[in-house]
Amino acid sequence: MGRPKITAGLLAVVGLTVFAPGYAAAQSESGPYVALGVGYDSMPDRDLKISGFTVSSQWKHGWGGLAALGYKWPSGLRTEAELSGRVSTVTAFNGAFPWAGKQWANSVMFNALYDFNTGGPITPYVGFGLGVTQVVWGDRFRASLQRNPIIYDDEGIRMGWQGIAGVSYSVTPKLALALDGRINGSFGDYSFRGSVPGTEITNFNYRSHGVFASARYSFGKQ
Image 1 (cartoon, helix red, strand yellow):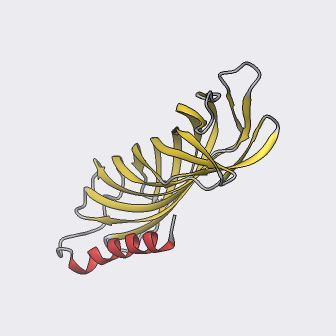
Image 2 (image 1 turned 90 degrees about the vertical axis):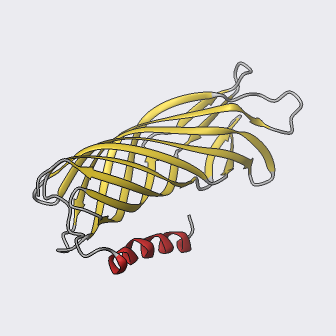
Image 3 (image 1 turned 60 degrees about the vertical axis):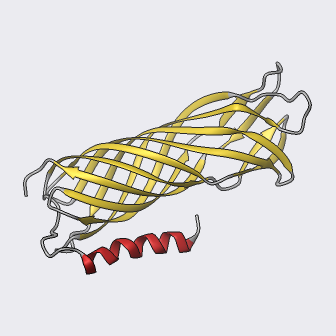
């Protein structure tokens, strides 16, 4: 996840304040809301063990989506339940041995976020989430140059976490647009059994970095 992409996105949101209509105001003080978002997702190199040997895995940039149902409290605190999914494609092990296959990471998170009231339409916020993350390897996850490769299509579920920091812009008192950075991870390692008995990839610790754009609609009263 490059700094220029993050910076450009944040400047775009801030720029809305310059050209926005004068009626834009802070979003509703409290009440329920729904949110939908899409974003860019990046998997950093991840260590794992294959047949007992430690190697590093490399991944292409992917994408993700999220949906949340939450409640905004008068104190500035927001609590929400979030469902998200991310897709990544593996490229190589140790940067030299081509692999093929995809990873789907599906999470259910319970987030707590805090909005910093600026008195205007721009609202910075930070948050943290805890939940569970299912990691699925599929699409014939394998060493692509092997004639008869071992297939590691498997899945696992572990406790997960995420950190969030971003900024929202209130288009109207009901509708806000947001841009945030997210780091997701797991508390435990994942293992993936191979198609040949006794083969297994172990000690894979999930981690991803992403930038998500979302729209949030409030049902509360101002």
